[in-house]
Image (tube, rainbow, N blue to C red; front, side):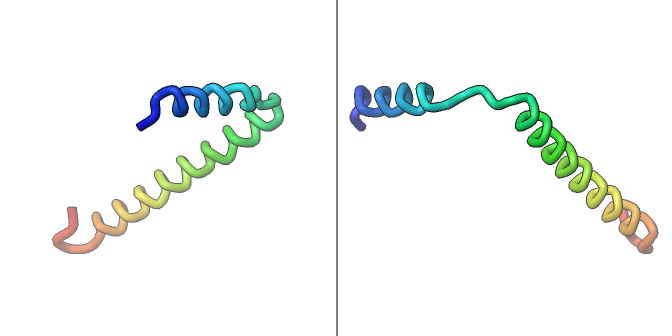
Length: 57
């Protein structure tokens, strides 16, 4: 493991990185929020189905 080489790689990546624009940030936030809601809804549907099945949760 070459520590100076690794540190130089990290610094190079940080120099290339840029702050996202407000539109880009907003779009990513909406997509991530929709994904979280979708996973939660799927979990709720599975819970509801298991509640109605005899011997379920």
